[in-house]
Amino acid sequence: MISDILAYVSPAFDSSLSGAVSIVLLSGIGLAVGIVAGLFGVGGGFLLVPLMNVLIGIPMEIAAGSATCYIIGTSSSGVMKHLRNKNVEIRAALFLGGGSIFGAVMGDILQDFFIVTVAGGNRELFEKIMQGGFVILLALIAWVMYRTPKGKEGQKTLLQRLTIGPYVDLPLSSRYRVSIPGLVMIGVFGGILTGLMGVSGGVLFMPILTLGVGLLPHLAVGTSLAVVFTASVAAVIKKGISSPGKVSLPIAVSLLVAGTIGVRIGMFLASKITGSTLKKYFSLVAVAAGIMVLLKLAL
Amino acid sequence: MVKAVSVMLLVFVPLIIGVVMNPVLDTLFKIFQKRTADDK
Image 1 (cartoon, rainbow over the protein chains, first blue to last red):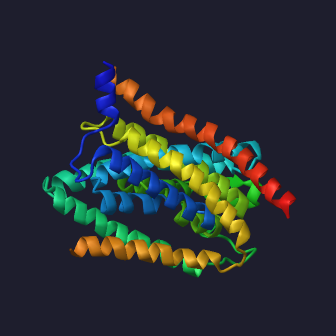
Image 2 (cartoon, chains in turn orange, red):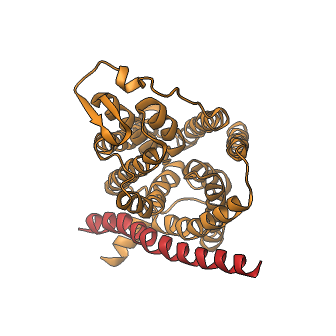
Image 3 (cartoon, rainbow over the protein chains, first blue to last red):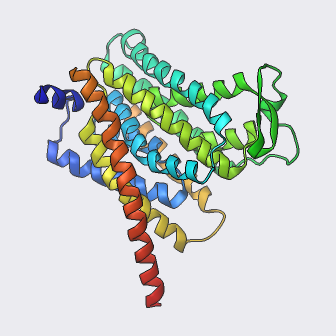
């Protein structure tokens, strides 16, 4: 029974590297991504999956599944802290979270659809499709981080202008008559990103929650984390019950232990570096990762 | 049964690591920052 469980939580895959080398490399990747995450105040999940795939050769679906497991660990304590400090817009989080659970399940089903139907079981083609998706995602993230769009105060937000009811009031952010289907759709979008690509999408969530929904920045951080946590738990459960398993616990734990230490190093470095343009440098990191995936795709 | 236990492990192991490790590292980080400030 125990050997069956161990086999289930560490699915086998072909890799040119030995187990010990993989664990050391994974810890290195976790540490590096953690430092970047702490330095720029982002989750960094969107760097993990392409790095694991390109540098270690971990299949995309296992890299994505293990990254969702990693996200549970990185978001859990943040969610608790923000809930304690009342930094979560609970009503918005409920509808966003509900949508994200549905989206996470849909995302995993979509991943199976890409493997079986679109790629016809051809692993190489599926890897290329996912790598193409990551190039687009990284380019989008780089653009969002570079531009840092700003809204105009006092104006109705997109979800307040959306005339599809029913509506909900978000008193902590002083936003009234916000479209519930709009909130659910944003949650579905985030959930699909988690279930399909193994990324939390927090970087994209922030401008959507502040500009699209109208949440105050500190509430957007807490609410986004709560939604990311919900989506990652739903995705791990869905991926965990599918056969063959898509989540590797040893990979997730190696990344998590090293990544958590890396985040603190990054935060320490960030406290030494000041300047409002710091976030713009982050787009360079996303561009570099995008080029790396593009090269892998082309070769 | 194997699947149920495996899924529980996949959810709760990272959850526990995150909940335990982050506050411990936060405390260590604060001590380290205080010491570097004191040294200055």
